Length: 235
Image (tube, rainbow, N blue to C red; front, side, top):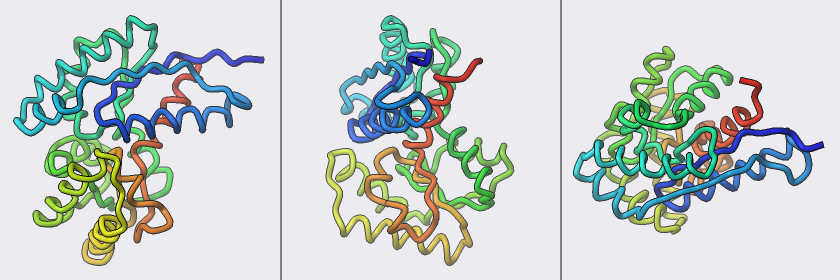
């Protein structure tokens, strides 16, 4: 018997993160829905260069306009709710929600829920420079009573470079993996962090649970799983 599920809309930014989110939805759903089954999914993405140009300019209203145009397209396709597998873009979500035709799930909520479930108390947060220095996780983690730490300025720039020069272009190198894991290990040792938020949706492609010095909170896959559960919920 086919289960009834809400239609998931994905507002995409970079291709690797959006692809990983879509793949996770389709691979995780059969556990709940039965063999081969997954909710209806629609994905829309504008030119990633447009997103990067606006983010680099600090134009969050511009980012919000792109996200709104995407979510209106998804609404017209019948999506019941939206997700965005891009942590940095969530800095504009507060500008999007009042005008959105459909509700959204927040990527950091999925991460917070999993951190609390595991009993983590002090999280290392990795992502783009804009994410690590911005309010997206700071606000959500503070509200949840969770401590958090980010790398120092030089290390933030190194992670940012890896993301924008390699990961969003589909490049995953061993040298970048070693560099990222060394930064995580410093946060484990010096800041006594007990888990790491992979707060860029491409970072799970680089930092795997097997290689990470800390337990990983994979924001991309956690958001995808939350979307499946929400699609199947009775609310």
